[in-house]
Structure formats: structure tokens, C-alpha cells
Length: 105
Figure 1 (tube, rainbow, N blue to C red):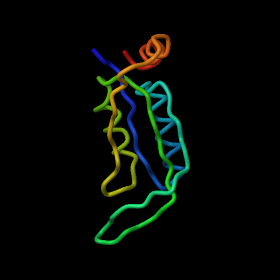
Figure 2 (cartoon, rainbow, N blue to C red):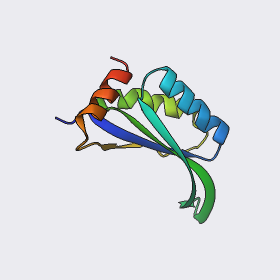
Figure 3 (cartoon, rainbow, N blue to C red):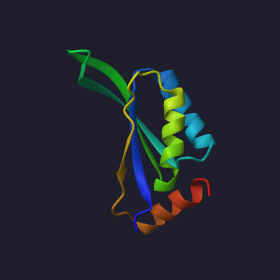
Figure 4 (cartoon, one colour):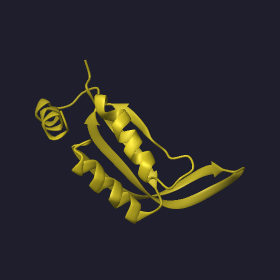
């Protein structure tokens, strides 16, 4: 059974993005996070918007998803934050073992 996932969120405030990264890692809710600067286009309040955002991709155990989601929601500045997960269906065993070891028990 697959035990791991990648959780994604995006936010337009780099300071808040870094605070999320620091908090999630410090609490050992995730094993790693990649941060990328992106341009997002989306519908908001009946209009097409475009903004610079920071995309965060976090690796963790599926069993920790709700805790990660709650922490992101606590820190996020958006009315409707993007928070979702994608199952890791495959992965090299040593990497999966590392996720297991580096996240809270």
C-alpha cells in the first residue's frame, strides 16, 4: 500500500512561504519542500487574474496530510488556498525510507 504523497500549495508572499517551509520542517510534518517562483493565471471573482506566486511541493506520509493541511491553512493568506495531495505511486525505496525516517512518527 502506498504510504507517501506530495502536497502542493501556492502563495504570493515569499515571507509567508518561507515561514510555512520553516514550520513544516521544524515540526517534522514533511521531509522536504521545493519552492519555485511561478506565474499563475486563474479565475477570481468573475475575472481572469495573473500573479507571481511561490509553488511549494512537500513530500510526506499520507497519514500526516491533515496536519500539514491545518498548518498551511493556519499560515496561508488566501481566502481559498490551493492545498492538495498526489499519491506517490512509485519511488526508489531508499528515498521512501528517508521520508519515513525524517517525518514524525
